[in-house]
Length: 117
Image (cartoon, rainbow, N blue to C red; front, side):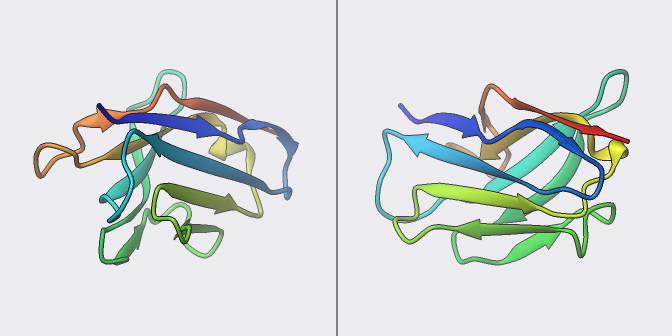
């Protein structure tokens, strides 16, 4: 069974940076399609970024040019480098993978990112 473990969240001032990591336990070898989503209080879940097993990358419009997604050499961890953070980036960030279907069907527990003005 694959479990996703997010880390790297925290409190940062506007303009600062954070790096989130999503580690997939119980799986090695080829990478999975992996995405980051976020959800702020009272708002719908929002797509942030994704990287396919073949390293095709997408970004949500609100983070383009500021966030960078990458896969490490072991292909069992996906990082999200977040630069030039804004208060509106404050949310719980979740990573998700397409494990059993062509949908984001396996999710991590989330990590809180708070950006102060």
